[in-house]
Image 1 (cartoon, rainbow, N blue to C red):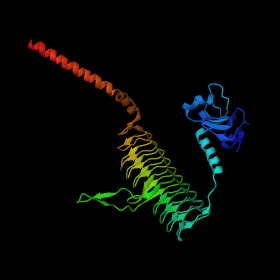
Image 2: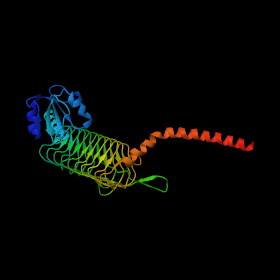
Image 3: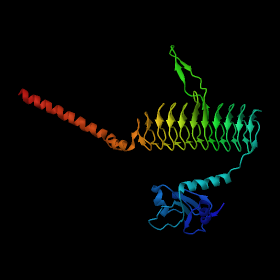
Length: 353
């Protein structure tokens, strides 16, 4: 498909600066742009590329002010990153066939209730008393356990598993290999130095617009529910333990984990390989840098922390200056110790003489 800059601006409710009739038929990163492609500029560190990009048009934020001539047509919008995502979503919808119908072999229990637009791929299994909303897409080799409820326009990609009694809202996306509702890690030590499994009789609830990445696990609660609130986005390879609650619109990068019964607030941003210990509370709007270890409550709204154990990022950056100097400080201390030892010898020798 081919669109002019004017057509794109009209769709995005933006404005054009430059040749509004220039045509684009593909998208590209701003540093790799070619003629006929549309790029975007959202991160200031990529600003130098806008002056030499070969893209025909570039989406920019309304507050962007070029410091020199730009050959590409500029399309000004409120949020260039969000606008670009909107266009990619439109392109993706046009590229892929909308799946419909029930493939065989697959198993759907006779008690299952479903609405129009259902797709069930081959070798999928849907258990007893399952309720499926409109336009639900269940790809091959998906397992949906008994008494599960899945809302409208939810997608379960190949190999995803949803255990019994779990609830998925509308517009939820579960990627391949993810497991929703597996047992929480609950074991009681016994007198025989062994461990007795604690039955996990709760469930997991994913509210509307939640997305769960590949091979991520969301454990069911021991009692009650593990909850991912509306708009939560989880990357691949994340562990959400039993009875955790993740607040609305919080995002987490790959290989992070939250231990049991912790509560993470709304609009938080969690970097990769972050570990959050159990039974603590993290306030709203908190940002945690990659590889941080959170071992206690974070009660300050909007806090930014780093390190293991994590603490305020400004204090961490100040401390890092000293961390880097530790080898040099060690050498200086060693030299001072040698010098002190020599002085002691000389003093002792002078005293004796």
